Image (cartoon, rainbow, N blue to C red; front, side, top):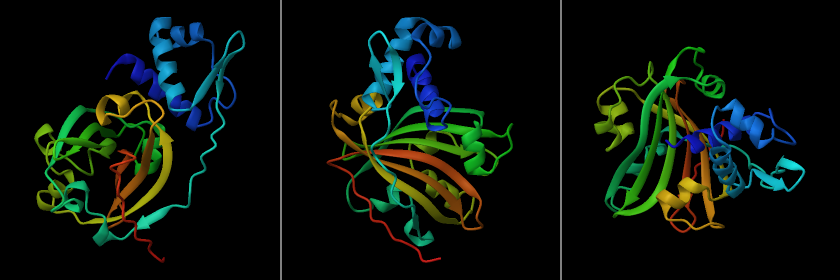
Length: 237
């Protein structure tokens, strides 16, 4: 991943975690923090601006934009309805995957909390573009714990991870908690979903669990507004 995108993602996490609630450090201070140039910082800030996270006031500074999109209630999908993208699209087109990024690293604090991991546990960091009949439909940012889902490879990522979990690891997939919001496109959406600046995106934030209650996926899926399609089933607890 490009350095400016890494920096943009890191600053976005700091905004979401409330480390920055009003104003960001100056560009020169950010450049020093990330040991890079102001040009790289400027590109990272443009990504955050497109995502409607920040705005710049000339001569004053970089401010965190108050989000006017409120998260709706969480939706929980039943175990037999949470089946992965490939299986949910059976009969609706030819599904292919382009792996943009794939590596193993130590879990960050939010990831460890969501996936119930220790601070030194390893996770897969996966970015995939999903295509239907050759047309980009989804962009997936997925974190999975290595100790829960061992053995993921590039070959598996080009197919169905969920089928691998069921058929090769013999694990039962259970429920998923989803939060769905409308969002504005970012640079990756433009590059990999063919979006234009100002387009809308359907953003789905998800924590998925095995049937025994073990969390195995912390993800965000971003869908083109004109190709999105989710059927949600609420579960009465």
